[in-house]
Length: 233
Image 1 (cartoon, rainbow, N blue to C red):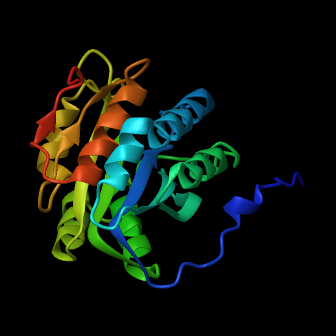
Image 2: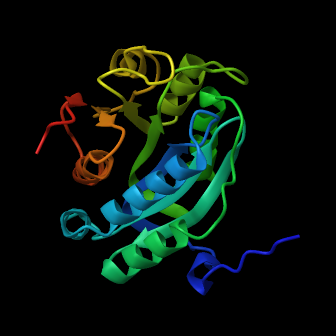
């Protein structure tokens, strides 16, 4: 059996009732339509975005000067890739980014979007962090839901718990590469919800990292408009 050696930063000690401005669950698509190269590309995109000076400035400008983030891949199952990490300075962000690139693929199979949203809710409610705001950021390339609770039922449970859901649909030529559906409309109707909920659409490829960075800045700052086009500066 192959054993993976993780950096010491990955094996973080529990966080004890630490107050941050934002608790953020990054739910990244790892379903069957996402191959290993795309898994790596998504992780690299988030690693580059979380360490970008504009994102770090947004974090430093919050009320507490800090946020807490966890990165979770979802498919038929959900798997935590990087556990809750408080980011208050560039060193924290660099550690999070480095840890994100280490583990092997941890989720696979067909879509269970409803279950993924409820797992995000559980991760927020069971951690020992106090966030002034609580957000699940869901990304995906389709709106299929092959098992588990329905997307809408799960969304409504999350929102009822005081958690906002934002979304990042991954598109090709403006639609889902998997099904050809308009994911912006579907995610607006079925996925996002809560105060200030919004969508940032990302075309697969070079614009992905820029879209992730815009999304993070808006989530950290709060109160964005409803839909952010891929061409936004």
